[in-house]
Length: 380
Image (tube, rainbow, N blue to C red; front, top):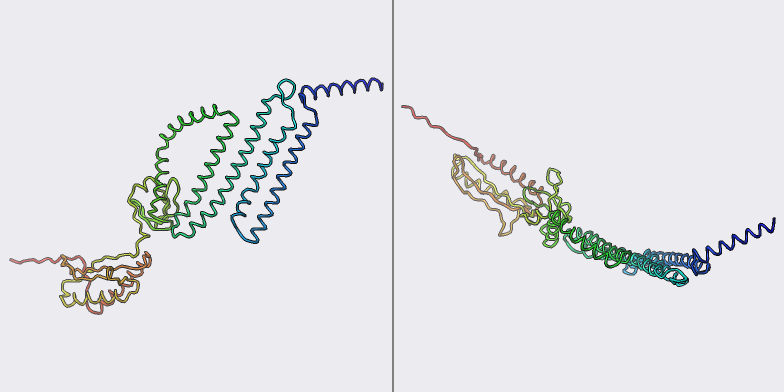
């Protein structure tokens, strides 16, 4: 029985050796594949160790000196370095194998092996560039924080997204070219170009909105939180994107206006005005006579001179004149400018002026006029 078992084990061992040596390994000893496996594990371990040291070193530098360029740079490259080391390991592992179309593994496998390593390396480079966008964003935020405009703050995330999308597209094209070949990628680009024309025709409004947003960011007709009038809508600007501008009206409604309409409309920026002007006609009765009319003008001037929020500059000093004879009243033209240009402060000033005017007119016996008509009947 032992002889039979020995014979069977010998035959099984010969069969396994034949399978391993000729059908699976194809001219490469078993130790070569073991070395490949060990090399891959070593590469992964080295990548993890390097990533660990970089992470701890950046934490140490942050505690000592805060966010510096070196700290941000190393923090961004921590994970991509692991992928790059793994790609290098995959590329170097093939030196342990024997490639030959006649006896060993086919040479085409070697070429595909190299292309695979290149693809992983391209992914690591794209990943590194993708993470380095955070460094660019950090310094852009520092630059825009020194400016008075808030529209620049909206531009930073747009630049960040654009850079990341560009990096992703270039990396995808490179990977597809390595996997499919240059000829296939050219045919895909030609097809994409033809399809892009159709898409561009269908999405012409979207493209118009994009260029409208570029115009807004370039000209800066308004800033975030400023009061503007765009067409029939009056409200505060809350957001400016690549497609639309959002304003909050006084009724609380959020109005979304496409950027191509905003760029081609007359934009009245009320938030940029240095003051708010009030122009009003004060009417008194005809029976007031010239004495009370003159006194009414003097009273209004005294009231306006006592309000500190009313501008007294020579170009915008208060204007009060007995200006006209209306059908049923004597007209006094009143005009003044309120600084600063706060709408609700402007309304408070108007209220104080109106109440004081009513009080002083009542004390002087000056009556406000209202639309009236006198009818005379002649008796025969």
